[in-house]
Image 1 (tube, one colour):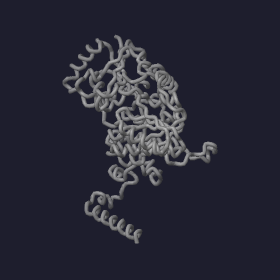
Image 2 (tube, rainbow, N blue to C red):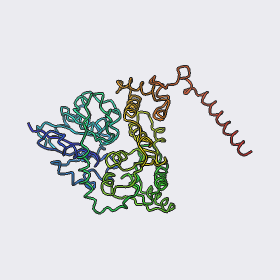
Image 3 (cartoon, rainbow, N blue to C red):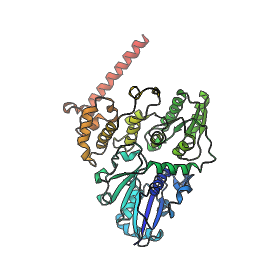
Image 4 (cartoon, one colour):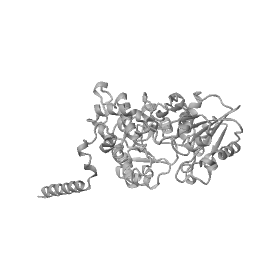
Length: 455
């Protein structure tokens, strides 16, 4: 019986990862390979899909055909639609007819299996083996939602890029899914193909690149706070001596953010270039090799540092570690990794001529692995209950130091972990009367300090 492999992608970065995996023979031979693209933007009608992005034509040859998930389930949105249980047999027959699958054995390769649209696709082909590929830092964290064992036990492996060399992903660990690396050399070769398509793109060499993420769309920051974050990136890059700045906005971010940066750049007397083409950051690394990459917690910070050895800097992670709510927010792991590994934008630039022993460096791999196991358990204690001993060890050894920034005392108390509020005082955070007394005491203290300053 013939085999058809269906590869699911919602980003050009993900499609490039799949292309690299195919080039490296990570998949068994198949009669046909179909690429199913999904546009998950809030308003897909105004945002280009994967197969409409610059450079995609260089990837198309790896697949026998390209299909659209949006067209398949129209008028529903990919992120919101899932099949009713009773309708699954009808949908599978419909898709086999629509996509010309016949009686072929179907194999699925998907991203973000814990949420739609990938979850919906795995539900429709009930007998298909599944492979998951990771297109970012979230794979180093626990599965964000509990997956039906009928789906989770079908997953054969997790393919991922070596974004943090030596670090093992936690994703799908509850099903003992083995992780497997996509060779970095193959991924860089694919990026070279993509960069060759940007012949008309010209940017100042040796400039500082600022990465926008559109965090306000995720309700992590307000629009005003995100604008301020971009201004902070600009000022920080200028403070490091860069006079040529390139801003890569998120494809769906408002245009007015770029205008605010342009005014700020004019006041600072520096040259600002705003990218209008939705090009991958890695293509810019390949073509122009910026002197510095600045961002918040974008995966592109790690590809710049790990794959291209470009200096990177972060800003805003301290605010996000405090703001992310609930604690289970899946962005917490990327923020934690970037905060732990990437130097702060305002920190003093290290002396690269100093000996390794004299120069400050990132946290060690064992420390980072222990930190992520502890954070992972605190995020998903039911899904990854097996991580409790590792979390207890890490918290016992390291919680007195900088590691506190990655945890919430109330969360530790709820899970009875080291660092929790002592039992006799556990009622205090929930006591409304005590909170009012504390607020009044703080108010009196501020008033006294202000009076002393004026007097």
